[in-house]
Length: 214
Image 1 (tube, rainbow, N blue to C red):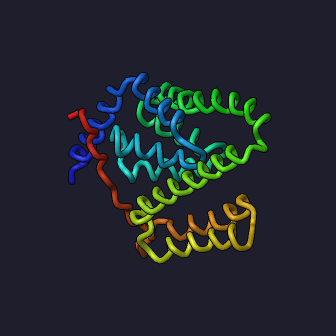
Image 2: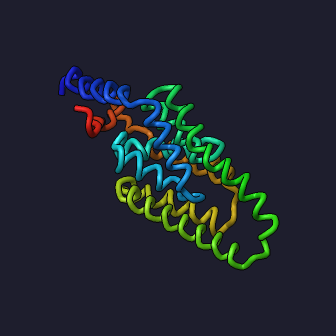
Image 3: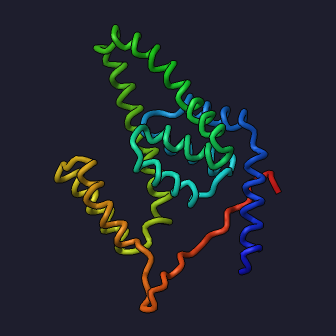
C-alpha cells in the first residue's frame, strides 16, 4: 500500500481527535473518576474510551495500558495522561488527569473522616469487601477481553505464567520481577533479523475512524 494511502487515514484520525473538545474529555474522565471503584478503574476507562466514545480501539488502549503499567504511579492517572495526550496533546493529558483525580480526592477526604468513627461497624467492612470483589471482577473481565488479542503465541503464555509464579507463588517483589522478566521479554519480542542484516518490518495497523467524525 502506498505511503500516502496509509498516511491519509492517520491524518483523518488526528484531525477527528482534534475536534474532540477538552470539555468532553474532562467530562468523560470526571464521570469515570466518580463511578469507578479501586483497581476496576481500568475497566471503566476502557468502557468509556473504547466502547462508548470510540476515541481509541482495543489495540491502542492495550498499548496505552502497557506503557502505563511500566511507569511509576497510579495506573489510572498514567492511563489518563497517555489517552488525554493522544487525543488533545498536553492540554488533554492535564484535563484527563485532573478530571479522574478530582472525584476520588473529594470522596476519600470525606470518607476518611467518616470511616474513623465507623471502622468497627460490620456493615461498613462488608460494603468495602463487596467493592473490592467487584473491582477484581471488573479487572478479570478486562483481562479476558484484551487477553485473547494479546496472547497469541506460546511465548506470551510463558511470560504470563513466569510473572504469575514469581509474584503470586514465590512472592518476589514487583520491581525484581520487572527487572528480570522485562529484559527477557524485550529480547523475545525483538524484530527478527534476516541473514542480510535487514530487520523484518513489523505489521502495521491503520487506526479505526472515530465514530461521529467522518
